[in-house]
Length: 174
Image 1 (cartoon, rainbow, N blue to C red):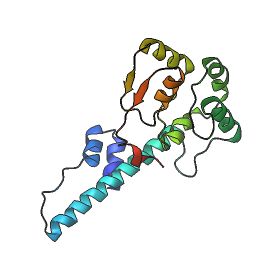
Image 2 (cartoon, one colour):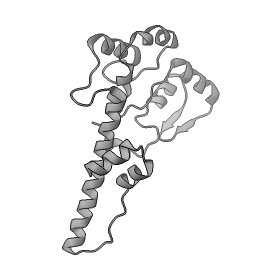
Image 3 (cartoon, rainbow, N blue to C red):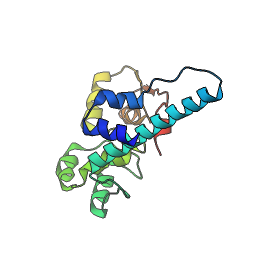
Image 4 (tube, rainbow, N blue to C red):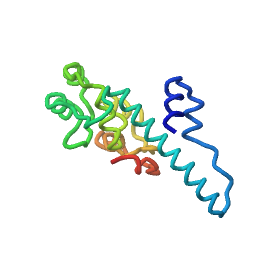
């Protein structure tokens, strides 16, 4: 597995990577050999997925191992700018974003850190207001709402919105 992954990654062969992540499953059966082969394929698939995730994280952050964290200044600034408390997102004022975001020099760590907690995007207050203007007096439905942050922001703007999600992502956050 290690050699196959190394070859696929070094050659940037997306077809080989796809095959490692989505292998052909062996024919079904209830024999001991069939069950053993199914487990082998599933283990190889999981190993490939974890290795590729680790490789991607290292490529984005520049850190191959160890704990990934903001330093005190970058963490404090990102927390104040993007969150109310803990990891509760807030609609970011564009003025403050334009002034303060350039001061954060560990930007590449933000998304890898928050994606693990199920955060995939941030919203500006201008964006939320514009979406609310477009919706106007109508009610709306947010499909694939995730944790419902956008719907929460829209409700704060007086919009009647219902958030829906199947939570298929729930098992991928820590």
